[in-house]
Image (tube, rainbow, N blue to C red; front, side, top):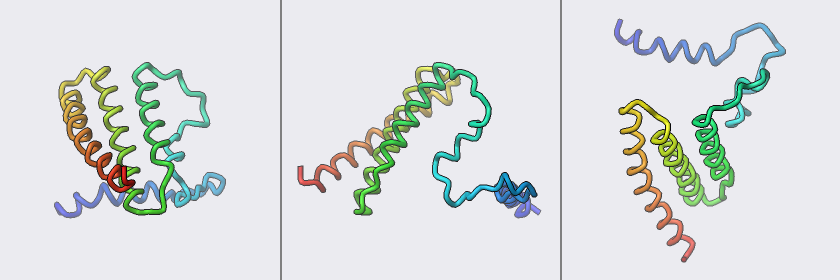
Length: 133
């Protein structure tokens, strides 16, 4: 029984994502979706963003821009993509420290900054060495 309860949420999530509806006009090629698919509210006018939302959006947009250029070298692609991702995590954590009220969220943001900045330094050093500078 416990195994069934553990698997059930995943099965329901897969079923929900699979669609299964009969509205052929609403079908989407999910395999072709990039991060653009995250904006599920594009059809309705959005309320103005709060200051915190705008800050998170800016951090997210910058992160995705940094991840868009994918070099042919898989090692460099990994390092550059993760570098942008980690910088995005630091930026989002800084936003959390500015706006978040919950102490657990704020504590996690501080820990994310410390961990990600150490890894950013490692990736920067690797890329400089790889590029011979």
